[in-house]
Image 1 (cartoon, protein in one colour):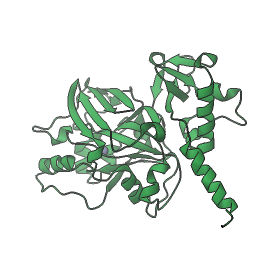
Image 2 (image 1 turned 90 degrees about the vertical axis):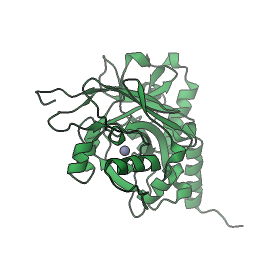
Image 3 (image 1 turned 135 degrees about the horizontal axis):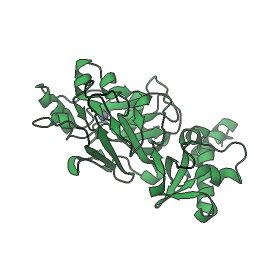
Length: 331
Ligand code: ZN
């Protein structure tokens, strides 16, 4: 029998800690009295302040944001989860969900949000049809990104200048937030690299996406990436390929899909994206949208000032964003 090396014991400990994280739902929030966005733990309709929870027993500085918690690693996640499960919510600062401002779970990602295009066959077909092309299923995942400055909260307005774009469209998506840094991640290990999941609306200026040829600009206008309302940890979320996604505009269902229909499932996306390229803890990957976008409809439909856009993923929750396209002045 071989004696385990220190390195292999350490790796095993890390993996075990990772797998035994208590399921959690995290939010980033602020209040009227304390407008600094900070980490909250969501339980039912209450949000507990993570820093207040950690204050009494945390050695060193407790993570003040979700990104700080994620990068602090599996031991910190387990500690916070243990504290949350042991401490009665009446003992620490907590707020009713209705009373807080909800920010994006990671309000300012440290790099671009990675996205995948044409990840549903029906969506690939509707795009091809509207462009008068033959539908093709991509041989490799189609990767593009959104700038970090696009990110807004789950109930914030989406704002644009009608002089810049006239073709604003919706895309409900499941987003994976990585918890472990890695490169050349094997498909079988990929889901162990995911910290949790959230809802992401990949709002798109179709006219800019077309005229500039590459997707970057049309996907990266300010406010074009609502995210939230919570991050559900991977162990609570379960199988990412067994969830439904819904998008409604002014109460009318426009998109309804299941993640089981993705061409490249979450693990395959991570495997492919990480080939020769380091993916870091805190990175966000949007996994594509099902059919039913406005651009693929006959006639095409685009968002207008005052429209209410609701996007939801089963097991996470729903975002509601109001569209603002004021004419006559730069928003
Ligand atoms: Zn998208």
